Image 1 (spheres, helix red, strand yellow):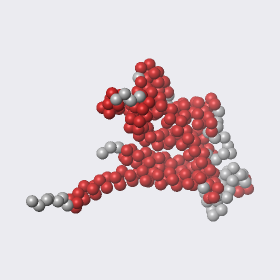
Image 2 (image 1 turned 90 degrees about the vertical axis):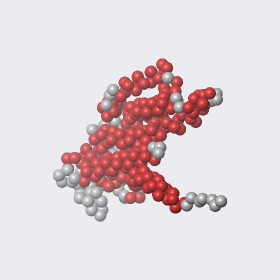
Image 3 (image 1 turned 60 degrees about the vertical axis):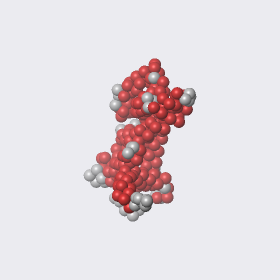
Image 4 (image 1 turned 30 degrees about the vertical axis):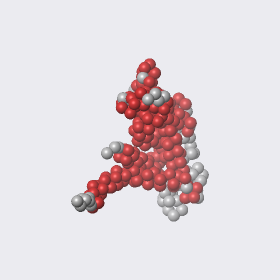
Length: 288
């Protein structure tokens, strides 16, 4: 009897569909990664991309329009706007990314403990989450920085102390649902220790949601930094920072619109890159 062979051509439409789906899912991730990569590269290479000191004042060259010497002109104190924009990216992006790491680690750890063990510890942690969530994020951050005083350390502490609650809530919810799955029950039946179950079986399966949320959390952190700088509670002058640049340039909108508009555009582009990165990660990590 002759054997019936299945032609590989018959599977091509399905394989092509899968390939198109994967490319469609990865497109936002690639776009977001490219945008953030360019911004981070510009911030790192700031000393190579400008010859001006971002804090050096030259009032004799104040409010110059964009030119070959000053790509974005100068501000009211004669400081090069392009230079301040690049060095400001170091401050905003640096604090924004670093301020999310501590809440991510702390919130994930507390969420694991609350969701896995339950009991009075779960009740205490979640009531603490409810208390923090009762206050709007920006209002709480501004209040903490106002009490501690302006500065990088105060901003970092304010964002960290208010940001852990979301990660705790997300991870706890995932842990509570996942620990009832059959493979977790089987691991317990086999006598695996709690540490092994948490770190090798539970955490790898629930951490993806927290990672995806972290990308949007960085946006909130950067917006908080810019807001504080705009209100005069951010990084003290003359250190360049996007929020303070917007605040200083708003009085010159009709004559030197780039002073406030360009830093605002930088904030929007950063948020767009992080949003695309988050959407791409969500699509890639989503099953199916």
